[in-house]
Image (cartoon, rainbow, N blue to C red):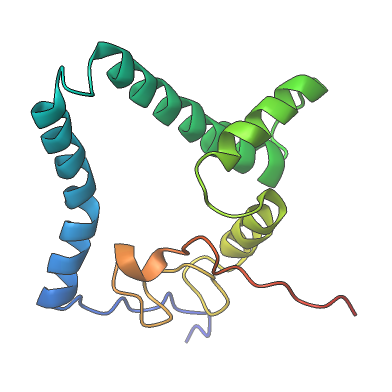
Length: 145
């Protein structure tokens, strides 16, 4: 008989939570495409489309390469100016302060899908995508002891 820890059993997502998740995932891109179509040549054109895509990629790479791989996991070393650029790019994603984000992500990796994981879809009453989101302004500071 083995007494090894068993992985948590994921709960089934309810139908209304599933619809809420799908709305939260698909409504923003659909709304952006709808607005771009209706505003084309009346406040939106190729320049703004290029800026939208460029800034999306810049902030996305700031989070994935900078905040996640460089700052959280220390996977590689870079010159100071590259570190600063990646920190600024990640900050443009509005996911909270860099140090808080890294700390939360390290805790997540330490306790993936177990008690203590700050954004597990299986814990905290989280219903998939919406249950895992940590919105800007929801970070807390703890006093040093």
